[in-house]
Image (tube, rainbow, N blue to C red):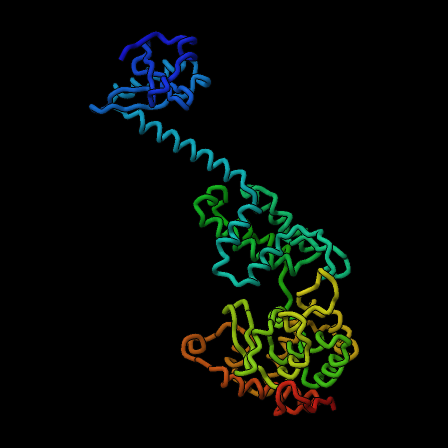
Length: 441
């Protein structure tokens, strides 16, 4: 290899002949330093030598970034490594890996809670139901969107309880920050804040198990502090439920609700013991009139099938089929087209006022179903299966399998007893959709 002294003119003027794939110019001053050029690419300094009897070549960089003295110094450095028995390629790989690791660590240091929350939700999606996933999305929503639904008269949506934390760097989500957040949220919405806090604890527990996020978190979950727990307080034990003697007044008042879809919805709640959101999410495809079953999408098993009892069947068959939802929205407009009914809390509150019943919530109707079954001494496992509660005993969990028809025996008995106590005369043997005797005594 002919060698020449590198000069600025020679380096800038060096080009590869068009008939060759590459060309080299070698420096006489620094051993192994060369300039490589190709017909299409830009020239680059290279270092070439022998290591353990084999030729090796490394790219140093562009003449635009490396001066000739710097390139010569780099070549001498690489040759010294070979003289010491070290492979400069390994050292270069280690340096690149260390640089990449440093950049990754810097990126993790800067990552926000919101960015990691999105990763968390995507990672957990296969293990969650759609409603559970939607609840986590709602916890961090920004709010401020104009909406006619679910704003309680404000006209715009409210930010989720965890939204104020989403812009923070994950490393800054410390115990004092979470404690201050808990104290603020507890002043206006303690119930929502308690749910958000539990979800935040689970999120941080997941982060601690991920190699990329664990280094920026403390060894102890920062959400698990006594101060945060005390700020949020304990949820009160709710006792609201319909008493047996209140059934006539409640049914009479609900049946007078002007919106027949809302009236049917409220009655289905108390006759099935389902969660308010589960009933609202019923689609017509979930109503099996052939086998008399209702498919309920729940948060425990994903879905469960309960009996379609006669009176509930009658209520559903009396509803209009406006879209895929059994309980469609009654509002008119682009915002509500194809949507479900808004949860009728106000109509229910008004009906309870007429009936002289105070403090009965929609979830209290679910509680009513469970409480009223005590009068009939229905097996607890049957009631739990209809309501979608987790089995509480080994025998229930692993050994008891109840088909739909066996549930129907108990469920139809429950429905008939509730209607009897409510003073409702109902012909349970008439075909669905046909005229029936339905009257309140």
